[in-house]
Image 1 (tube, rainbow, N blue to C red):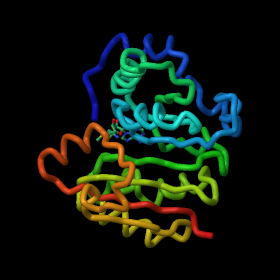
Image 2 (cartoon, rainbow, N blue to C red):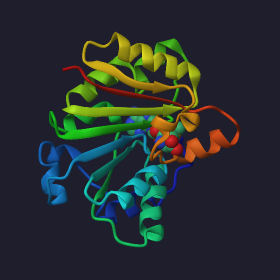
Image 3 (tube, rainbow, N blue to C red):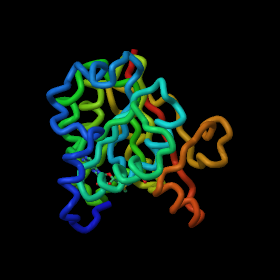
Image 4 (cartoon, rainbow, N blue to C red):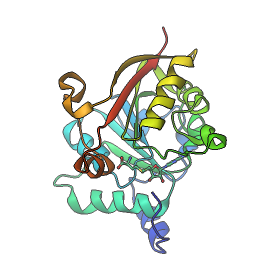
Length: 218
Ligand code: SAM
């Protein structure tokens, strides 16, 4: 997702206390940022933030960090937080960055869950390393996930899903602990499912939603 450039985005994000400006400064200290030792969950490629804001409202004892590459997109999430939230949320932060640098921002074991929702497919084979479920990204995630942490990935793109299952299965660092080819009709996997903006859009078109869960090998 790339919205047209919005000139005021950078100044709004600069003013917003929930947007962390230099994430790398807090590497190994995210629990201090939140002022508690609750688990930290991140969403990479958060888009307009519906999924993460819903989770943050539902689970005040979990800290959430949304990562998004484009300031024009992150602006939408920040506006949602400022306008929609019935109660101020103390358990959510945002970072505007390319996820390629996640291991510079989080220390080993600091993250308990990584959500990847409807990640860009990068269909050309030569762009495979840019896919957020590629082996290159899995290795980055391994550097920050707790040993009992999980990666949860959803998409409606079958080629990307099959690629992602193959990457996890080929990985020496992760095990595939669950997968479904029809999330919304899978009673167990769909329990507590929160729909993202893209999930609402594509499931309304009748597309099945695929989901996998992976965790670090013992
Ligand atoms: N997760 C949202 C949803 O399901 O509705 C948005 C999905 S949208 C297709 C993918 C988002 O991931 C875009 O907003 C894009 O800018 C962001 N993104 C893609 N690659 C990224 C990267 N390397 N680092 C940070 N964000 C990224």
